Amino acid sequence: MINWLKRLFSLDSSTKNALAAETIRSIEDILKTPGKACSTALMTLASACDRERFVDIVSCSSLVGSAIRNGEIHSRKPQGGNSFSTPTFLFKSAEVASFVNGMPLAQSIFVLRKERSLNTGPNFVHFNIGRATDNDIRIVDFAISRQHARVNFNGRHYSVADLGSQNGTKVNGIPVSDLPRELVDGDIISLARYEFCFMSPDSLYNCLRERGEKGS
Image (spheres, rainbow, N blue to C red):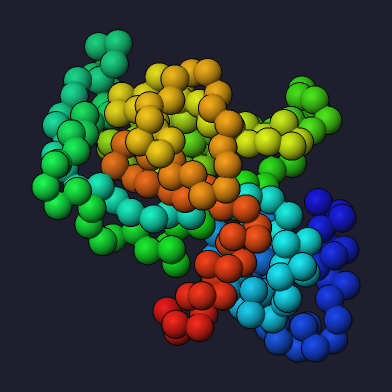
């Protein structure tokens, strides 16, 4: 945490002038946790920095929302017969009109940054994804299981594994089991009806600059 804060606040004067104090605070919040990021702040940072500086500051990959798949959601009974627990709904994807608008980039950037736990190796961190409040990345949707999937980072590579979810996890359309599958830049991760693009800092920079040039 200390290193990236030093990099952030050692920006040259012209870059600092381009970043309002509120934006800098937003960026600080973004890079503290792997939760949903403020894309406006990230876009401002991308517009104020060159590629090398942006990559140096962000320095980790992200999950960027790309689509919500259309289909049907069917009610399911709570697992274990517990009538007080909230059930995960079974989602069946439609063959026609398979994609709908509704999850723009501006609402769904999850930066995969997290403080390392003392219980793990020096370079290993993981990010739990699901509907429950104790997840690192929370997606509040009944098609998402309480504990849906996990993204791992071993210091060099990212991977994703399913956590026994009701509606499954896929990478580029191929189902993922509880055995982690390595991710590469540009992979599409499907969690129930939600789809995310796995992006390196370099790819995120390109995406944000492109959106900024389009004025979106």
